Image (cartoon, rainbow, N blue to C red):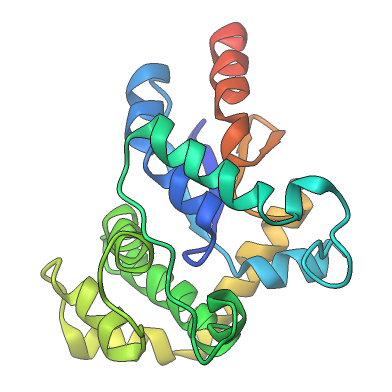
Length: 211
């Protein structure tokens, strides 16, 4: 997509969920289209050798309760729905969710994109993950969320399971890291990288100044 903003995201990232709710306004306000690029955040962090969730937090922003309070403030600021996925068997939800279902949601987003419903499929999955009362989330729920957009279930399932889809997901991660990404959400426009939901104002400013 010519001159598009590349939006690198993972469906199970809370801050990527927040950023996804602002994409339509970003496109409308800047006049620049957004290219939705699903990635596996863990794969991106591994390639970039940047893993803030293993061992002691590298900074206060990754510690509880600050991180949860920050998230709640952004939800309130944007005025968007949000639910923190429940704990599973006493585990933090994101630990219990990894890695199979995390990877599956990434593949499903990419498969939906291949079927012509890129943004819609990802928005549906973000909503399932962070703005629904569905839990636990397994393959049937993931597939149902995208099929509801009017896509063929058999075709979708085949694309999710296609090794080529897995390869392309890795290629997306490689492209993200090559552009400077070390996590999600990451935005890249005309070679300049912006990391994090909270950098959206700086991205808007940079586009306005440049154009």
